[in-house]
Amino acid sequence: DKTIAEDEEELEKAFETICDGDSLVSREALRQWDEVKNLLEEGMLGEDEFNDIWDRTPKSLGSSDKLIDVDGFLSFNVALDDLFVFDDDEVENEIDDDGSEDEGEEAVEDTPQKEESSEAAIERPMVVGDDLPPGVLFSALADEKYLVGMKELKRWGELQDMIAEGDLLPIELQNIYAEVPKVPGSKDKIDEDGFLALYEAIEALFEDEGDEEDEFEANAASPSVKPDLISFLLDIAEDETRIPCGLDCTEREERDIADLVASLEQESTNKVITQNGIIETKDLIGTWDLVYSSSATMKYNQGLSGLVGGVSKFAGLKQKLEGTKYMSDAEYIETINIPGDNSFDVRVTGGWELRNSVSLFTGRPSTVLKVTPEMVYYGPTKQIADYWKSLGPMSSTDLTYLDDDLRIMRGTTSTDSIFILQRSSN
Image 1 (cartoon, one colour):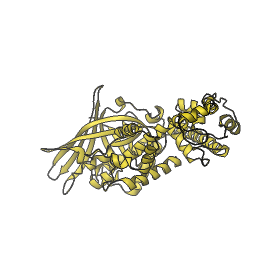
Image 2 (cartoon, one colour):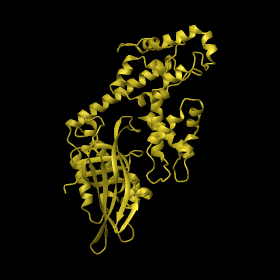
Image 3 (cartoon, helix red, strand yellow):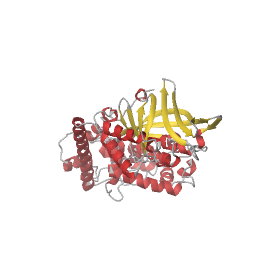
Image 4 (cartoon, one colour):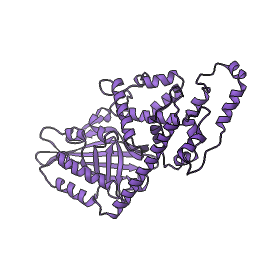
């Protein structure tokens, strides 16, 4: 989605203006960010709401001071946007019809007719009818100044049905509405031309979904590319002169694998599609072998732990996910070979969870796998994982493909970082 990608780019630029030398942001620095500071000063965001969103925002794994990285900053803004999707009525009720704030009880008592008019506007009926022309629909929704805002859109019956049924997400509506030109001095409202642009953008969104469904159905009738992908990765794995998991793939090989992955993600075997992005814990429990990664960080470190160096060589990585009603344990087992038929394992232990989210890239429901490393073990050494920056690439990933024995993950802030894991037969 172009709009979402542009929003994310703007947020990343804003993040660069407030982060420290380690590309991290503290609670106070975020509070002093102009966007947040203005909302707090204008009373549109309460201190308790700010603190609640901050507490729920994932913190950087390597930060002992509970700081957030760019991923956390994007998550904070998604939560902030969601807050205002539902708070428009409160904002509208605090401001009178001519755009000025209430001046006290006396002013309210002197203008009883205005108060009654406001209440009548709130109680106006829903506008129903699936086949209403957009111009007619605008006239039915518009306020006394012939304008429409988020408050008026809540009376659009078909739109509210789309949101209630999950066909249109609140963040999608908000992103579309944000792009429509507003009438100056109108409290962020749109005129008829703006409403037509909004209407057409929503229609186009569903046309895109129809195209995706057609592509999905076409892929269901076509031969799967999965055997080609597995064969490609097997050829790389069987070459003993190469680094396992494709960590030394050429740019051409990476492009070929990325193309196969993109095709596989659209196939009818993908549980992410068939289950509308909702994956359960039981779907992932087990031991998985990493068979490919395009992560630049893993390529640089030649593995996950960052302990490969000198004559030692990365020999493979397993991810073990265990879960019950009361706990979810994660463990990485990285094997490192050294000359003389010797090898040792690096074990990273911690917890994991699945979070239902909305992809910042597609705007669609997604499942994020969050792994929180706690301890690192190698030989007689035992260390707290908080300071292991190399573990970052696999700490937060979007699940984009899943079947009974294959899982594909992408980085939550970089879809070019691909992780392919195969369920272990051992």
